Image (cartoon, rainbow, N blue to C red; front, side):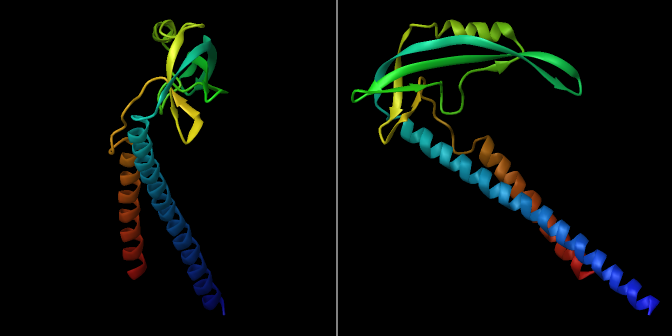
Length: 176
Protein backbone atom coordinates (compact mmCIF):
# COMPACT_ATOMS: atom_id res chain seq x y z
CA UNK A 1 0.00 0.00 0.00
CA UNK A 2 2.83 2.38 0.91
CA UNK A 3 4.60 1.61 -2.38
CA UNK A 4 1.37 2.29 -4.37
CA UNK A 5 0.91 5.67 -2.67
CA UNK A 6 4.53 6.55 -3.36
CA UNK A 7 4.15 5.52 -7.01
CA UNK A 8 0.89 7.49 -7.34
CA UNK A 9 2.51 10.54 -5.74
CA UNK A 10 5.50 10.31 -8.11
CA UNK A 11 3.17 10.13 -11.11
CA UNK A 12 1.16 13.08 -9.80
CA UNK A 13 4.31 15.17 -9.36
CA UNK A 14 5.49 14.17 -12.83
CA UNK A 15 2.10 15.18 -14.27
CA UNK A 16 2.18 18.56 -12.49
CA UNK A 17 5.72 19.26 -13.66
CA UNK A 18 4.87 18.20 -17.21
CA UNK A 19 1.76 20.40 -17.32
CA UNK A 20 3.74 23.33 -15.87
CA UNK A 21 6.48 22.92 -18.46
CA UNK A 22 3.88 22.59 -21.22
CA UNK A 23 2.21 25.85 -20.13
CA UNK A 24 5.60 27.58 -19.91
CA UNK A 25 6.50 26.41 -23.40
CA UNK A 26 3.07 27.41 -24.75
CA UNK A 27 3.56 30.90 -23.29
CA UNK A 28 6.49 31.36 -25.70
CA UNK A 29 4.36 30.20 -28.63
CA UNK A 30 1.54 32.62 -27.80
CA UNK A 31 3.95 35.53 -27.21
CA UNK A 32 5.80 34.68 -30.43
CA UNK A 33 2.62 34.66 -32.50
CA UNK A 34 1.44 37.91 -30.90
CA UNK A 35 4.80 39.65 -31.48
CA UNK A 36 4.97 38.54 -35.11
CA UNK A 37 1.36 39.65 -35.69
CA UNK A 38 2.08 43.02 -34.07
CA UNK A 39 5.26 43.46 -36.12
CA UNK A 40 3.58 42.60 -39.41
CA UNK A 41 0.60 44.82 -38.54
CA UNK A 42 2.89 47.72 -37.65
CA UNK A 43 4.69 47.28 -40.97
CA UNK A 44 1.33 47.28 -42.80
CA UNK A 45 0.13 50.43 -41.01
CA UNK A 46 3.48 52.07 -41.67
CA UNK A 47 3.14 51.37 -45.38
CA UNK A 48 -0.40 52.77 -45.41
CA UNK A 49 0.65 55.86 -43.45
CA UNK A 50 3.04 56.85 -46.23
CA UNK A 51 -0.02 57.85 -48.28
CA UNK A 52 -2.03 59.47 -45.44
CA UNK A 53 -3.34 62.93 -46.32
CA UNK A 54 -2.01 65.95 -44.50
CA UNK A 55 -3.66 68.87 -42.80
CA UNK A 56 -2.35 71.85 -40.90
CA UNK A 57 -2.06 71.63 -37.15
CA UNK A 58 -0.61 73.63 -34.31
CA UNK A 59 1.55 72.56 -31.35
CA UNK A 60 -0.56 73.10 -28.22
CA UNK A 61 1.90 71.78 -25.62
CA UNK A 62 5.65 71.31 -25.66
CA UNK A 63 7.51 70.57 -22.46
CA UNK A 64 9.76 68.12 -20.66
CA UNK A 65 8.26 66.01 -17.90
CA UNK A 66 10.94 65.17 -15.32
CA UNK A 67 10.53 62.12 -13.10
CA UNK A 68 12.55 59.70 -11.02
CA UNK A 69 12.92 56.02 -11.86
CA UNK A 70 14.42 53.46 -9.49
CA UNK A 71 16.03 50.14 -10.32
CA UNK A 72 18.78 47.88 -8.94
CA UNK A 73 21.41 50.51 -9.80
CA UNK A 74 19.65 53.22 -7.80
CA UNK A 75 17.48 56.17 -8.71
CA UNK A 76 17.94 58.20 -11.88
CA UNK A 77 16.29 61.29 -13.31
CA UNK A 78 14.43 60.81 -16.58
CA UNK A 79 13.16 63.39 -19.06
CA UNK A 80 10.09 62.62 -21.16
CA UNK A 81 9.20 64.99 -23.94
CA UNK A 82 5.53 65.85 -24.17
CA UNK A 83 4.36 67.23 -27.51
CA UNK A 84 0.65 67.73 -28.14
CA UNK A 85 -0.98 69.20 -31.21
CA UNK A 86 -4.43 69.97 -32.54
CA UNK A 87 -5.75 69.74 -36.08
CA UNK A 88 -9.03 69.49 -37.93
CA UNK A 89 -10.36 67.20 -40.62
CA UNK A 90 -13.55 68.12 -42.47
CA UNK A 91 -14.31 70.78 -39.86
CA UNK A 92 -14.00 68.40 -36.90
CA UNK A 93 -11.28 69.08 -34.33
CA UNK A 94 -8.80 66.44 -33.15
CA UNK A 95 -5.71 66.31 -31.00
CA UNK A 96 -2.71 64.04 -31.01
CA UNK A 97 0.66 63.41 -29.42
CA UNK A 98 2.34 60.88 -31.72
CA UNK A 99 5.40 62.11 -33.54
CA UNK A 100 5.79 58.86 -35.49
CA UNK A 101 3.81 55.61 -35.44
CA UNK A 102 6.13 54.21 -32.79
CA UNK A 103 7.03 57.28 -30.75
CA UNK A 104 5.64 60.25 -28.89
CA UNK A 105 9.19 61.53 -28.44
CA UNK A 106 12.28 60.62 -26.48
CA UNK A 107 12.21 59.34 -22.93
CA UNK A 108 15.79 59.68 -21.78
CA UNK A 109 18.17 60.36 -18.91
CA UNK A 110 19.92 62.92 -21.13
CA UNK A 111 18.17 66.26 -20.57
CA UNK A 112 20.12 67.81 -23.44
CA UNK A 113 18.67 65.27 -25.89
CA UNK A 114 15.15 66.07 -24.66
CA UNK A 115 15.76 69.82 -24.93
CA UNK A 116 17.06 69.51 -28.49
CA UNK A 117 13.94 67.54 -29.43
CA UNK A 118 11.60 70.07 -27.78
CA UNK A 119 13.17 72.98 -29.71
CA UNK A 120 11.89 71.41 -32.95
CA UNK A 121 8.30 71.60 -31.67
CA UNK A 122 7.73 74.88 -29.78
CA UNK A 123 4.24 75.73 -28.56
CA UNK A 124 2.31 77.62 -31.25
CA UNK A 125 4.32 76.19 -34.17
CA UNK A 126 2.23 75.35 -37.24
CA UNK A 127 2.97 71.80 -38.39
CA UNK A 128 1.90 69.31 -41.01
CA UNK A 129 -0.23 66.57 -39.47
CA UNK A 130 -0.69 63.28 -41.32
CA UNK A 131 -3.86 61.42 -40.40
CA UNK A 132 -5.51 58.11 -41.16
CA UNK A 133 -8.42 58.91 -43.51
CA UNK A 134 -10.37 55.94 -42.12
CA UNK A 135 -9.74 57.02 -38.51
CA UNK A 136 -8.78 60.72 -38.37
CA UNK A 137 -8.06 60.46 -34.63
CA UNK A 138 -4.91 58.51 -35.54
CA UNK A 139 -2.25 61.00 -36.55
CA UNK A 140 1.50 61.57 -36.77
CA UNK A 141 3.82 64.49 -37.46
CA UNK A 142 6.54 62.52 -39.25
CA UNK A 143 6.08 59.70 -41.71
CA UNK A 144 8.36 56.76 -41.07
CA UNK A 145 8.54 53.43 -42.88
CA UNK A 146 8.80 50.47 -40.51
CA UNK A 147 10.53 47.53 -42.15
CA UNK A 148 8.90 44.10 -42.26
CA UNK A 149 11.63 42.68 -40.05
CA UNK A 150 11.35 44.96 -37.07
CA UNK A 151 11.97 44.40 -33.38
CA UNK A 152 8.52 42.82 -32.88
CA UNK A 153 8.94 40.21 -35.60
CA UNK A 154 12.47 39.47 -34.39
CA UNK A 155 11.24 38.93 -30.82
CA UNK A 156 8.38 36.82 -32.15
CA UNK A 157 10.75 34.61 -34.12
CA UNK A 158 12.98 34.23 -31.06
CA UNK A 159 9.99 33.20 -28.91
CA UNK A 160 8.89 30.62 -31.47
CA UNK A 161 12.43 29.20 -31.62
CA UNK A 162 12.43 28.95 -27.80
CA UNK A 163 9.00 27.31 -28.00
CA UNK A 164 10.26 24.79 -30.57
CA UNK A 165 13.29 23.89 -28.45
CA UNK A 166 11.15 23.62 -25.34
CA UNK A 167 8.53 21.54 -27.11
CA UNK A 168 11.15 19.14 -28.49
CA UNK A 169 12.73 18.92 -25.03
CA UNK A 170 9.36 18.22 -23.43
CA UNK A 171 8.50 15.49 -25.95
CA UNK A 172 11.94 13.94 -25.48
CA UNK A 173 11.51 13.98 -21.70
CA UNK A 174 8.08 12.37 -21.94
CA UNK A 175 9.42 9.55 -24.10
CA UNK A 176 12.10 8.68 -21.55
